Length: 403
Image 1 (cartoon, rainbow, N blue to C red):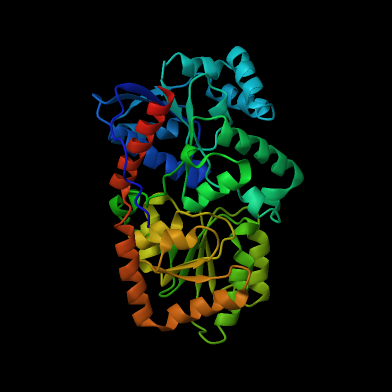
Image 2 (tube, rainbow, N blue to C red):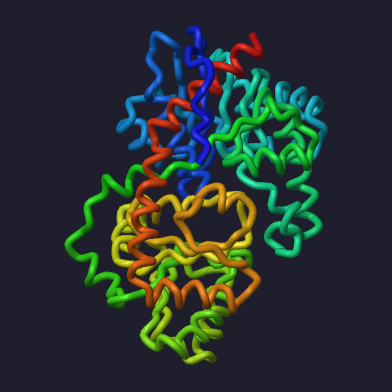
């Protein structure tokens, strides 16, 4: 795993703004934003003045926990809507119109920041008057266009407009990995030195949470199971996973699967498929699992199995490794970069390969012990404090460039 820690670490008394329009519903982007809030809270006030501007009140406990200066935004919802409307315009035109019309842009300008950070692929990123740091979590609308949630004609056009502006109208771009940097360069011709990998980190709540006394009673988990926390989007590949389980159970009839995620999108279809394959008792749909309960699943699971088609990288493998849970994951994009030798890989389009990985880990105790050890070692290579230092280096470089 690349550590990304070299470079300038002084910020020269600048004012840095962090825009939080993302809410808890945003999944990985919310978790990434949490990590950035923690990193910004570690910056000494003698080096830089940090202001977090937020819309969703759900963030308030985070600010209290991290002791950051936070400013609520009056025009958050209206400003977000206008930013999305202007998103289809060329960057310079969108910025000019936003400066005249969008009250949120004026509200952010009143905070007099030298640089703004946007953690959630926000359309507002290139519409503010000040230099900005954009974040691009993935470009799967280009690389996995067969999935309607990414590549339908309208969604593709909107995402193209958004990401082209994010890549080339900002002062710098944050990505999750070297593969993510390659995707941005390949897609939009963005300069390599304009793009900064800042990999995801395992959320701190995994080690800080205390399991509730009624955990076992609420979830009634099987004694031995695979775990997959993911919303029921087609690209998450639940259908092949369920079919792989059906095949695996011809060899291991005790194999079971626990699926966490809101009961929306393909949920009803998956329940039907499970019933048709005789797996209604072997697959446990537990619904939405709050952050405070996730560690309990990882600690009990035989392993995380994640056959997703999307990357470049994902947060659940980091969660699993930090909790001592073996990882079985698709071999797409940056997943090998993220997990190294601490995972079993398979081609997500192959039911046979998914089944083979599940069978191997189910029956091999030595393999499981080895993956747990390697996962814990890998988790120790990139922790929140490393993330904090790397972000500080990136901000120093960007501020030097725009000075």
